[in-house]
Image (spheres, rainbow, N blue to C red):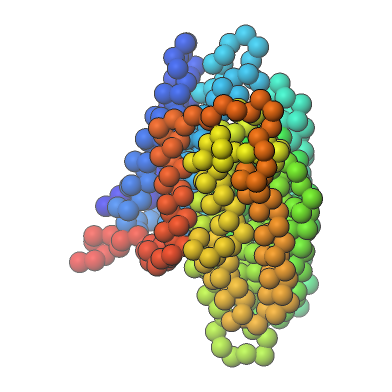
Length: 500
C-alpha cells in the first residue's frame, strides 16, 4: 500500500523533471513532453487505487486528510489534467506562433509542465483540512493559472485576460487571507476541526464569525465563478489558450467546491448562524443561475458562450451546496448532497472537455471560435459534429446523457431540502440552456458551411480515442450512473497494521 503523500510529490517531481529537460533540450520535439506527462499522470492515477490511509506524524495529521471526497477529487484533478494535455498536443502549433518570433519550440515545454503544478495544487486542496494548507495549495494553482492564461503573450486578448485574472485573483486572495486572519483572531487555530470545536463556544461573537465567513465566501466565490464574483470569467475564458480555458472551467471549479464544503462544515457548527449563512448562499445560487443563463442567450462566440455556461453550472452546484444546510424547523438530518455534487462535477468534466477538444480542432482550421465557424460541420466532419452535439445535449440536460442525471440529482437534493425558490429558478435555467446550447447544434447540422470551409478536419489517433472515450462515458453514465456513484463512495484502504 502506498502513502498518499507520495501522489502529489510524484506529480511535482514530474513537472520539475520536464522543466529541467526543457532547459537543455535544444531542438527536441516538445510533443514528447506531453506524452511523458500523460503517461506519468496516468501512472499516478492508477496508484490512487492502491493508497492506504497513512499513519501520520502529528504535524501532517493537522493539515492533510484522505477521506473518500479527497480521494475522488485527486482522481478528478488527474483525469482533467490528462485530457487537457491531450487537447494541448493539437494546440501546440497555435501556442508556438504566439510565444516566440524566432524559435518555433521555445516555451512549449513550460506550457506542458505548468499544468502538472496546477494538478498538484488541486490535489493538495482536495486533502487540505487547515486554512494555511488551503491557502498554499490555492496559491500554487492560481499562480500557475496566471502564467497559463497569458501564455500566448503575442496576442493582445491573451495578455488582457492574464492582467484581469491577475488583478482580480490577487484581490480574492486578499479577502481569503483576511478571512483566515479573522478566524485565527477569534479561535487561535487554523485547523478545521479545532476551529469547528471552538466557534460554538464563543459567546457574543456571532457577528464576527459571520464576517469571517463572508470574507472567505467572497474569495471562494471568485474561484468557483459564483455571482457576484463572476465578472472575470467571460473575458479570461475567451482570451486564454483553449486548453487552459478548459482546465480553468473544470479543475479550478472542482477544487473550489470541495474547499467550500469543508469551510461550510466548520461554520455550520454555530447554530445561530445557519439561517443567515443560508440566506447568503441562496442569494448567490439564484443570482449565479440567472446571470449565467440569461447572459449566455445572446452570445455568438462559442468560447464566451461556454464561459457563461460555466457560471450557470456553478449555480447548479450552489443549489446542491444550499441543500447541505439543515432545514429550518425540522429535526430531520440535513440532506447529504456531497454525492450529487461529485457526480455533477464528474459529468461536467466529460461534457466540457469534450466540447473544448472539438473546439480546438475546429478553431485550428477555421481560425476562430465563433459559432458561425461551426456552420455545416456535420458535412465536413460528421464525427466531430456528433461529439459536439452530444456535449451540447448533455450540458443542456437531455435524457440518456450524463447531464440529465447530474441535474436530476441536484434537483432531488434541493427538493428534499425544500428549496422551492431555487428549484423554480433551476427549471427556468434549464429551459434557457436548451436555447443557447441547441444554437450550436443548429449551426452544425442546419446551416451551410462558410465559404472556403470545404476541407475535412483530420483527427489524430490520440484525439480520436479521447473523443470516443468521453462520448462513450457521457452516454454510459446517462443510462447507468451507478458505477460512478459507487466509485464516489470508495475510500482509501486502511493501513495494514491497523487492519490486523
